[in-house]
Image 1 (cartoon, rainbow, N blue to C red):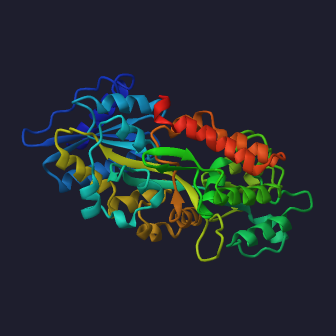
Image 2 (image 1 turned 30 degrees about the vertical axis):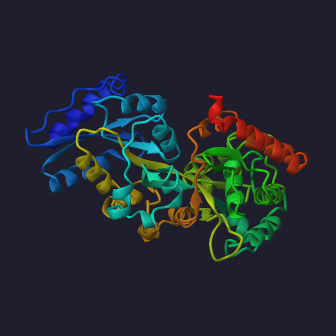
Image 3 (image 1 turned 90 degrees about the vertical axis):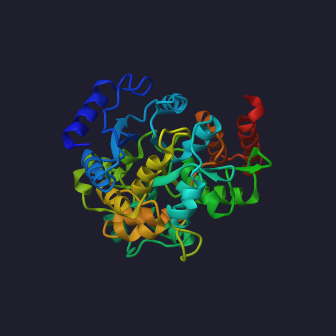
Length: 422
């Protein structure tokens, strides 16, 4: 496809934005000997320039394939993908959130990519937080594309004033440093009481889980000894600041709190620094990053990994061509390009050196090597919709019995994940 044709394709996508996802726009004709692969990417996942570079590069190497890349908003994408997967003329390759794969497989409509993943897609080096949620009942349906995760953002001036020359590498060092920073009217850390993504990492570090599957049944697991240890550490850390016990990190937005200049640390994705600097330009260049510390200095703490996987619609008209597109997007060349363009973590641990020159992304990459995702139940979104983990955290932080509250929250998770309750 020529550059002119691609611009026409993008124009068509925009002009039929309200209907393209449901009814589709007419595909541009390729040559009689060519296959057109339709790809859905999400808005904000890649720049227009990256899409242009990838399309040019791919089509030069595959003169029998034309690409029709369409950009769609994340808002409301779930139902639209579900409908598209049931259409014979639906997209061939789709970018989906890493935690969404299970629900799409459960509803029917994705190609099993296990063979390709094991043979030539490099699955042995994939980030676990992208690979694990892309796997469902032993088969690989989602191929990791890119990742982002939380790190510790810190105020370099406050660290210097406290005489802390190096970021902590263990949990105990972290607590000691935070205590030291929690003086003179400053908060050692701002940690909201319901930041359950951060709690998840502490639970995983202890060997626990939010929920566990056995014989096809999911059960809440917050009441396990390991999960309770994770909550205990969260409580110790949260007490070293003035974060609200009954709200999450967006109420109020923690970037605004940090921007006041008296908060030494917060846990967030590195991109939050831009919001902080916009509110307080004096902090520009004074924000540092380090991975969430682990139990020992040998490896950083576990973190929740967000990001995207690539999937192929079941029954696509040309499976081989669709897989070639996935192979390219997930391959080393375009992974490095995407990571440097968007400040993402590449999909493989072996590609971390590609972002070593960016301190923020390097901190993310170190944590992503031990990243995890939420339980791969197709009903997990229902848990988050009325999140019992948040309520559990507030009850513990305000004096409730951890074991009793964890048991009650686990029971609610189990009830929500019960397939028979549909």
